Length: 180
Image (cartoon, rainbow, N blue to C red; front, side, top):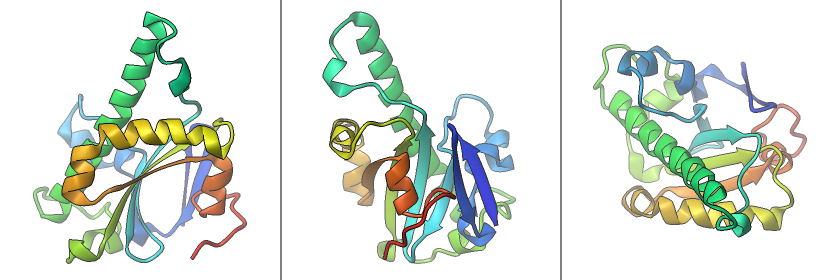
């Protein structure tokens, strides 16, 4: 069982068979600099494959145009997250299609996916200090718009959660609720 500390939260406890800690993997290291990735990829709750990115905070969509500096930081933040999701999906797919020599660090349940049409791909951003659930709608709309092509091609669902919701979905160690 693995616990992944990230952005002031503890994600897990995950069975190694369901986990690809892409950010610390040898596959990722061998690809070299310049390819950003999410924290980890997880086979979750049956046929879901989750690409999870964690952040302590998130720029407020409503304040985006208040200044050039805020607009630039907003673009950098969302551009970076979008790139992480897309790169991670590509690395994962390349790995399960045997494009890399060594893939043993990818959990067996992630490596053995043979029929992608039965799999639900989910890009999940967890923002530790996000305000309430209604506030999450802004970042969700922004990511959904930026990831439109990938969503259409792969049928990816985009989700934005705060720490409390991540716990309810059993993504963090402190979770107490079971979600079907």
